[in-house]
Amino acid sequence: MSQETPLWMDQDLTIFRDSARKIFEQEFAPREMDWIRQGHSDRSVWNELGAHGLLCASIPVEYGGAGGSFAYDAVICAEQARAQVGSFSLNVHSAIVAHYILNHGTEAQKLRWLPRMASGEMVAAIAMSEPGAGSDLQAIRTSARRDGDSYVINGAKTFITNGLHADLVCVVARTNPAIPGAKGLSLLMVETADCAGFRRGRLLEKIGQRGQDTAELFFDEVRTPAAYLLGGEEGRGFVQLMKELPRERLLIAIGATAMMERAVADTYDYADQRKVFGQRLMDLQNTRFKLAECHTKAAVARRFVDDCIQRALAGTLDVPTASMAKWWVTETNCQVIDECLQLHGGYGYMMEYPIARLYTDARVGRIYGGANEIMKELVARSLEQPR
Image (tube, rainbow, N blue to C red):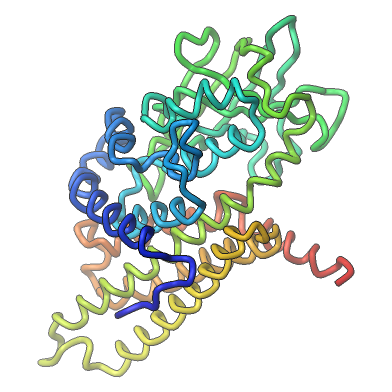
């Protein structure tokens, strides 16, 4: 099932994509089941990723990155999802936290953290969600009070991707308790090594992405230098989050599209070989029609996502469009993978078949990065604005 080369892909990106695909398939995919069994990847993986040039690909060379565009993050995201290597989040590390630092950090902050993130010496995470605040970031209760040359952080965070290995955490905290809602939030960087009062909780057991180290993080009078505040002044956290979240949501849609395409390709191969009632499963009209529907949905998703990538590269990707991509592609991904699993019959329920892991791994796409209900609300609000 061939695909057209999108307009945003050039020769250099094609070479990079082929290299990334080979690395994920040959170096990391064979170890994925071991990581799933232990609940997390090995810490050394991050150093390997750095050596392969897969970290901070869109960060400027002067800060240790590869100097590429968002297109390189898009390629890495798609190839990681396609290979079903989900036990570490390059999106969070390279395409999200690194860009918070790049876009909002001081020169000293960039030079301190980005080169070490690019090499894999530092693993990064972002701590937004709390036990009582998920998609509603304005309900965040984690506090950070100024005390001399430090901020003192207190609170608990949950569902933190890369939480087990994180050496650097971008913490969303309330620096002004007198200001309710969004205006009192700030972003503070915390280096976890030898950090008094910082504690990692248990690794959270999930129905999918079971090798990814999703953890609870606790902050009990944790001190971080005041110089580690992103943006130079308090109260800018929510604005910074809103600026960067479209990028995160597009990446989720990119990964979901790659999963969808993988599901359709794997199911076609299975149906082409599987014999039922003396003929190929692919010869049955129901199979052909179902795969035609799935292939069509995957093709539509690919065109929409490619258009969003072009907008992101041009700097014109807006919040409603990113929200549309995130909710529609992740919903469609779950629908397509469910149909593909059904065509596998009983084998689709067996973990040895990739479709089974695709099924469980896909479901969280409708939740993280902002629940799809929130995405629809953002789209609906855009309809009420003057056009």
